[in-house]
Image (cartoon, rainbow, N blue to C red; front, side):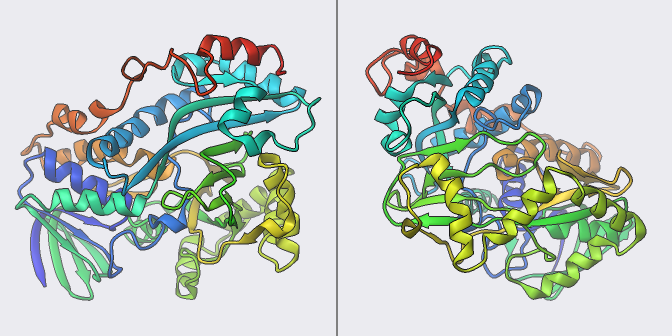
Length: 473
């Protein structure tokens, strides 16, 4: 196969698919192609078993600053609005309660300050503090078996979107393919990208593509491709594999997060019901550093070595990162979780932070669950870069890990669309108003859902907040 296109997108996960949807439906670009190396779309990290299935708003992610939460919030609302608009049958998502849990005087004080003084209560009008009694009504297992003398507080919201990002990816592509300008090629692995006078030539195992603009949305492999073209040479990757433990019975109705350590770029352990089977409760993710770009694929060890660099700056960066007194114990502890017998025993206390009554026989490591999330290493600063990893070059964009991943895929796509139009010399236009109408325009606001009315416990939100502030029953 060969083809000449205005825009070629490399990567058929949620990031590439969201850009395809945005450019195909809301710009007048004449010709767009998406190329995916796997035989199916969303086969790697976007597959529903390979991620936490969470739509991150920044409301209960306690390692987010208010500024970070403000950035993430719009992106999450764009995707939530899309799901509200196109997923009445709940094939792509489920909507459940979501909360972050504080246990003990110190954690309770931290959560109260975050809500009242740090501005999160103002930024998220659906978020509200609840005490032990209402927690027990929404999530009985969170309270059951816990010491009644220990203080508890939770920040709870109904916006607990649990998302199958794989099915969402396919939905984006299906809508994009309604347009005549779009071609999608699966089972087509890119072997080389070469700059030309008019853009790029993309060589694949199945033929050649010529284009004026290119966006590489191939996850960890994006940096590998970027460096082959001379970009991102001061960056490396710290690939982190996430795993989960499962409980057979449905212990939780929604998502329950624990407080996160602010210095760590990894999510705190949380529990939630699986997006397609509420009878399965998942706990995780664990975070294990691995020398590969894809989970369970030995062939990608060489790809990791390519982006690692094997130079002094990379070695010093890894040494500096791993010497951190918070990160090193965390990394070592997570290595234990994969060990037979030892792993579940070590992980059990983390599960019991969420559901105290869980015993060792109740959980088992989830085989086949979990993907690899690349953390960016800045080799010039010798540190982890916790922000968005995007490289913009001459008529090319490399998306490595848009922060926080799939949650902001549509916001990232909107930004990239404007950049692509600049690459194409302003010949085309983006109808942002129509894009917002199709997505965020369908996100339910507090005035639409009567958030100020009775809560799940029958009390008003104001009463619940007052009860919570009174240090729980």
